Image (cartoon, rainbow, N blue to C red):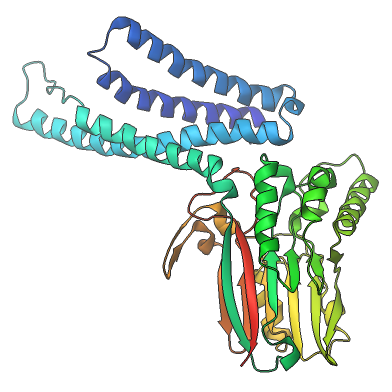
Length: 414
């Protein structure tokens, strides 16, 4: 399927969506003055023309006009606009099917002399319902950008481990994941999130990957914010699927490799001990626990860089083993089956889809249809997995019902 055909189909579908919604707008404005109708019509279809122009320019003109945050902002606006309209169309389609059925019944029961049934007018009430239904996701997703993107929440868990040395009883671990610094638009809010973490006075901090979206330069303006993350026993980090630059076209393999080296340097500048398929010991009172860091490895389509055998080798003397691995699918695929003495794996990656509902013990998100473990704490036998919902965001620059997370895990002797 060539590009021209794909774009043409897309524009036809978008035009149909706009036309369908405009029928409801026209019905509700039929009693308005001519000037008001003209203004609304001009604005409505003017936005359609602008949208089509952007799509055509991006696909057949100069795509560099839409790079980075500007591209994200423009296409997020287009997505929210049409996503909201589709909600309204659902109500209009239900009504139109009903009208068609009533028209057919009338045609056979009371045939008109001309052989045509009497037209069934569209309901003004349902037109209003359709527009309200379309406005609901528009408002929710707009609020998710304005407020939800940086509405940081502390989530606390206590995990009891029977083999935890007494010297580590009560140790407090803070976890960040999925910073995605290339998506941030409010540096002050990001700094506030870091201050929230530091106020918890954690003994150790874990960062479980995706520092950037594509390029190491995205984090440059935030190094002096995230380097404030400190802990007495250290700050340990690992890489996520976005950190390798796999989703960008590079001028050469050398450029891509240099980008990744710069990303590793960013971890160093922030004071994070980046674990690349390796481990570190933390010793207190002659007792040791091991921190293992696995490069990105997931059961899905993502490139597998991780080598847990390498990270695990030499950790036998540790009473407790804690694993940093970005993708939660790693837990079922490799960790539980091959490493039963890894006590807890800390992951991220899913973002909780940046959209969902969490009320008490009830959780729902589209993420659960992709990942078995997608947010929060999971246990199988004596092993645990914690999936952080993410500190940042990507694609849609906001969150609805799935606020960004700072995790605090306290370990206790069972």
